[in-house]
Image 1 (spheres, rainbow, N blue to C red):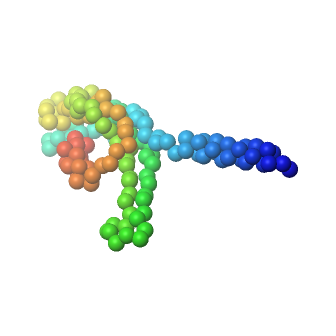
Image 2 (cartoon, helix red, strand yellow):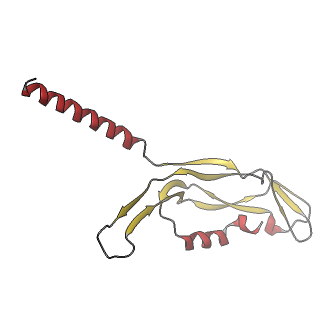
Image 3 (cartoon, rainbow, N blue to C red):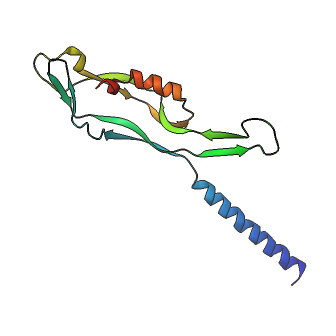
Length: 147
């Protein structure tokens, strides 16, 4: 085998490795998408006031679902703490506005507080860092938390 043949074989093998690497990185792309879904166990959604009067609605809400790439970088040989840095994003809503939607069917004399429900409209789903403190704050303000 002459030197020219060896160089061609080497180039072909490098090209094959490169094409495999490119296709494997394509499969690691984030898959964070929005779906409109019924809330399990809440279809229809029923809210009841202190007098026993209730309102009902068949409701679909925008839900972000999917996965976001995570990665870790280790700092071996350093004395810094922590010895690694981690990037852990979640698939969540970004933007949009909260909109009050009137309930479909309400009993006569139902409390006005239960006649509407607030849902997020016009948002998009993205992968981003989400703090635990912000999650707690949003849960306290969420209209589903006081059902």
